[in-house]
Image (cartoon, rainbow, N blue to C red; front, side, top):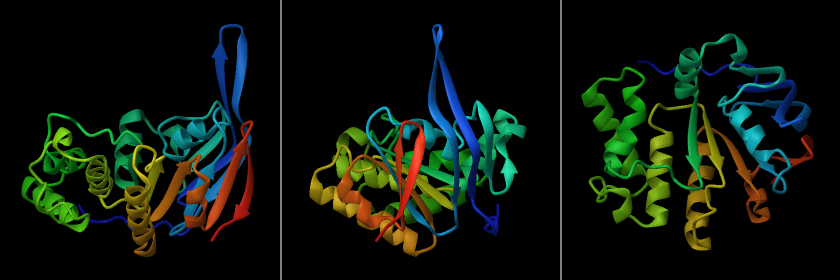
Length: 234
């Protein structure tokens, strides 16, 4: 499978998006008329207090959920028009995910965890294994390929997660509190790695409450009560 060409416009666009949850007889407006464009090669940091709508926004930016009102576009395509299987396929090619809790499969080795996303994209077995090896080498884990998550430190597990996020050569890396379970030294190493990926052409969307990470962003989006205030970064 060849790499898709980058989209000329925004990779991700939210147009007057609302997300409303029904809580018994009450409606909770998690996002309220939010519009946002994320462009190729940007490093965007989304921040805000607990309950501000950060997680809801992350799910929409990552095309893991659809809005109650408004539209979300992924590479110019309205995701509300896609079936779940179609959305999973296009999301799997375009977006790689890195989570605070790593989300590695405990019974699989580091190599097998990195291989897994490629199995859903029709990539041949030999190519999957060779690519996974190169990605683990890139993140400094060439000697840990056959270790399971429980045999790795937190920093090593997050490196595996970053390698896994790159498995299908996505345009966007969505990182949700990627340093939240790491000590400060290891967290800086992970952020430096994401910064290098950005310089190599990956679009990075970082969701965090840690003000120390704001300096990495080209753009800072501060969300409060389901609305965004924007300012420049770096």
